[in-house]
Length: 113
Length: 115
Image (cartoon, rainbow over all chains, first blue to last red):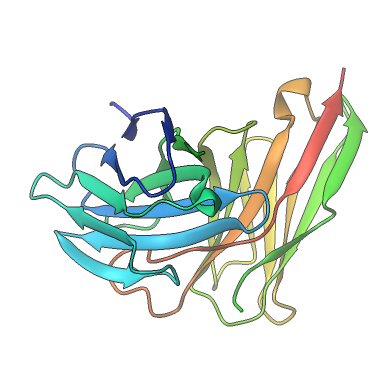
């Protein structure tokens, strides 16, 4: 069974640009969440999607947006990049049952220069 | 904040020894989960314990949960060098609905196991 796939693995962008990150969940998982990880703030929740609907949103500015498609794949977009957006962005998926927790992808390392 | 806090921040032990990490949180929870992260990579789910459970085992892992003290502990027995990683506790909210919901992570414990 394939795991959670995040693309790309690494990304370097310039301040002011925008970026789109992609996440393919485990087959059959309809819930997808995104987290940002930085040395200063740790793991911060960005969004949760279930069946194409955003169920939860973390405390991030409107420059951060996301969506989920009918095949449960998800994308997140960050517009007008700032240096502080440099982070490891992690996507996680889960089935409706909670027994096994979340399965995380390997992350996308975004560097803003 | 519901965010969990792990203690200690760093732990260094020899192979074969046991490692104990603690987690405290502030609000009522539905469940508490432990994850492991190897340097700069994704998180790996280790174990989930529900709020009505007190102890759970998985291989060399033992997790306890004390909801009255709002605390949990993760014990790794007979540690190996391959256990070297950061360990995070994460709490799941009461009102999670039909999904796991958002998780509130602590800052993690960096465990180093020396051969």
